[in-house]
Amino acid sequence: CPRQAMARCRECHAKEPVCVECAVQRHRNLPFHWLEVWNGEYFQRRDLGDCGFVLYLGHHRDPCNHIPQGAPPAAFVVVHLNGVHRVSLHYCHCPGRHSDMSQLVRADMFPASIDRIETAFTCELLERYHLDFDVSKRSAQDFVRILTILTPIDKATGKVKDRYREFMLAARIYHHLTMLKRVGPKLGMVIPGHSATDITVPCLTCPIPDFNLPDDWEQTPEHLHYIHRMILCADGNYHLQKKIKRVDEKDEALSKGQGYFVPPEEVEPYLGKDYKKKGTGQGKGKNGVIMCTGMKVARAQCSGKFKSVDVSGILSYTCDHLHFRPCATVDLHTTETYARVYCVYWC
Image 1 (cartoon, rainbow, N blue to C red):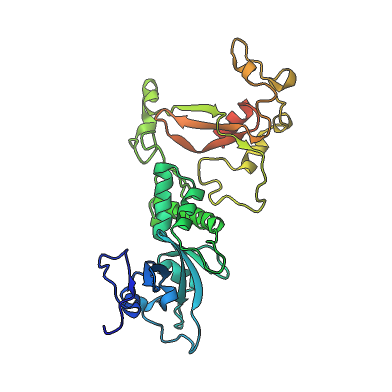
Image 2: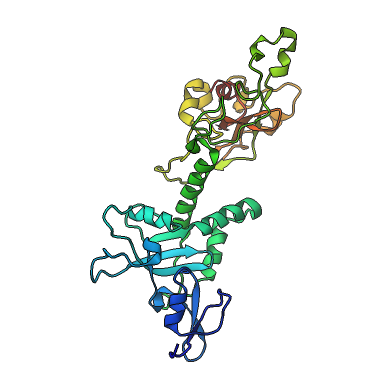
C-alpha cells in the first residue's frame, strides 16, 4: 500500500504498522479490536468506528443492498471483553428481514433494552462474566470497573460512562435464557416425574417412577418397601438474610415457581394470622421467643436478632443425597415455624 503506515493493532498477531484504511479493512470480522493510530507524538488508542469502520449485520458483513440511500449508520455502544466500544452499525433492510433485536443476537450481541436499542453486550463477555462469577465470586461492579479502565477516556466528558445498570439487566436475562436452554425441555427432554417448567437439577438417585424404578415396584412386598422410600430433611439457615432496603416494586422474578423457592402467593394460604405477624405465633412465649425445653435456641432468638431484616433466613428440604428439592424452599420472617415446614411439604 502506498499510503503511510500510521496504525497498528496490538490485539492481532501481525502487529506491524499499516495505513488506517488497510487496518480497518483487515478488521472486517474483528470489529471490537482497538487500533493504535500515530498522532505525531505517540500511538493513541482509537475505536475502529472512529477510523471509518462500519459494522454491517447480515450478508456476511457485506452492506445490505436495501439500505436507504444516504442513511447514516446507527451510533451504537458495544461492550466487549476489552472495553466499551463506539460502533457505527447498519442493520439489514431486506424484505422479510429479522427484527433488529434478532439481528443483534444472531451477531452474538445481546441488547440491553427492547425499545430504542443503543447498547449491546457481546455474548462472549456475558459468558465470561458468568464463569468469572461462579469461579472467583467477583462482583458485577468490579467486573464492569475493569472494563471501564480498559476503555480510553472520552475527550468530551473526560471520563467513561458507567454501564453497570445496563450490564446487570443484560446479564440477568442472558443467564436466565441460557439456563432455560440447558435444562432440556426446550429440546424435548423431560425427566419423568419432573415438571416440564422446572429448571432445577433433580436428584437422579432418589426413586423416580418410570425412570429409575422397576416396572413392578408397586408390587414390592411390604417388608421391602423401605428400598423405594425417599428420605427428606427440612432445616433452616439464618445466615441467608435480606436486610430492609428499597427495592424496585416492578421487579419480577424471571423463574417464579420454576426453581427452588415456593412462590409467596402459594405460601400465604397455608399460614394462619398468627404466623403472618412478625414476632408472634403458636408455641411462643413472651416477646415472641420460642420455648424449646432443654435447648439453647431460646436464648439465641432474642427480640433484636431479626431487627432490620425483611427475611430472617430460609427453610429448605433436601434429600439424603444432599440435593435441594425443587420448589421446596421458603423465606423465614422470624423462626422455623411448623406452618412453613408443612407448607413446603404440601406445596
